[in-house]
Amino acid sequence: MKVRILYHDHCFDGAASAAYFNRFVQSKFYPDADFAFTGMAHKAAQLFEPELFDGDVNAIVDFKYSPDERLTWWFDHHQSAFLTTEDQAHYESTRHERRLYLDVHSRSCTKYIARIAREEYGFEAPDLAELVHWADIIDGAVYDRAEVPVAMKEPALKLVLVIEAAKGSGTVQRIIRLMQHRSLRDIIEDAEIKALFEPLYERHLRSIDLIRKLGRCEGRVISFDVADYDMEGYNKFVPYYLFPEGTYTVSVSLSSFRTKISVGSNPWAAEEPRHNLASICERYGGGGHPRVGAISFERHELDRAREVARDIVEELRGEPSA
Image (cartoon, rainbow, N blue to C red; front, side, top):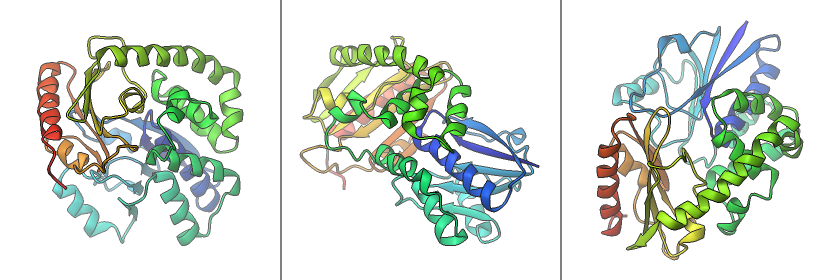
């Protein structure tokens, strides 16, 4: 028997969700199954190819809904959980017939899975409490100050860097398997993982200098464009560490498979952010949470992405909205 788990790739909460879900269903439902993982990324063409659902049991965690009838389990917590209104209608009409769970008020998908597993199925994993705790902190950005996630002193925060920056999905899927039975400190001290972390941390330090050089904060909006530099991603708290007066951040970056606009809000802002960033991103085909969102374009659509980013910056600078 094969269980296929589709998860949000290069995301700590996505990896932790896959790990917790694996432990849960292996314990309660499929003890002898083989588990396989597929990392999912938000792309301009956000379609689930039919061949993705190749398991006897198929699950999606921390990612958008698919109406494919072969989907057995689904857990998500994003406002932008549905690609289309038809998908949402399909979910509403079939959610009582399958194991489909959505809670947009949950800070992390991992903690949501843990709650449902406990309340509805009587499953608990005390040894995974650390994993659930950190997934909730990381996905909810519950830090005392910006320096904490930027300095990366905790094992969980070091793993965030490896998960977000590692090439391909192989490393993330190895971490998912390790997360099920090992502490976060043990994982980051693993020789292979540690060897990946060290050069990535040096790259992280260089990215701070680059964002300091390129970024500007006007009208409480931090904006910068790193598409012309070798920097697929960056620590999303760096802008608030460098420009603490900013309320929002808007950036453009380029990866091997997409052009991306990242939109976020400062958890330590002097004034409460008034815009729902997921709703703004949805207008351009993206989505996310009220306080953080993103939009993906095809790789050749860099000019279009830059134009949309400018529009979003102007909208956020203009404020009103609540």
